[in-house]
Image 1 (tube, helix red, strand yellow):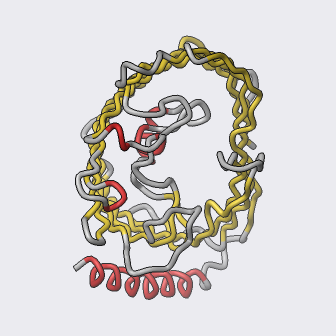
Image 2: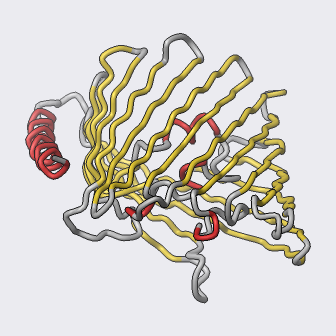
Length: 332
């Protein structure tokens, strides 16, 4: 069923994008143009627990890319991701994070290629501090942020949008061609101003089906932004009974034009915690994560955030870990 649906969507994608491109040729009032972009994450931090202390200067991420607009509706984007590989002696590795063509109108959009996935885009935007720490599903490896595939979004009204995608399932670091696809579906509701609800489901099957379910609610009122999400993944890596779940709660409050405070709480739980692989940078296995700090924007495109992280592991044989750091985002 998944293979038949995947084939149908790919066929529809080719026909749809071809017709969009043909229609764009008649738009003589638009001047094609492009623009480069860059996004850099860096920090200095001090980490302490019973096992010892450490301090580090880090360049954790650098995105360099170019976006080109062929017409009012059709664009293309390439994005190179420079990041710490976390293995070996390499300081940074470069991979293609995005390379896609997109059609976008008021009601409908389609993306094809190495695309940003829809799994946690809404949650990440509501959290708002990606340069400090990834959103829950991204941090704890419920799915990659980019993948090879095709995605559609349809918004029949301002209060609702639907998204559907078929993905390679390997993520942007492994462009592997096989017969195993990940199929995703989501719905986003905005019933009234400032309030957002998000539901998402995906499935990826080999011997056992890996499924992910994400539910999220967020509210924004003036300078206050809040969010809560519940996430569960069954048979992670298509391994039977390797289940992981957790919640994330976060809030931020703008106190001045260039100054805001924020906090976040995560709780990660696994069915078999002893077999759980390492996850994010701070939280290594099941446990609770606490984040609090303030964000300062001295000039447009630059953010600075002194931040505290606390990690309380579920395994009581491990010690509580504290980290204080100053985090920087540069965007242009």
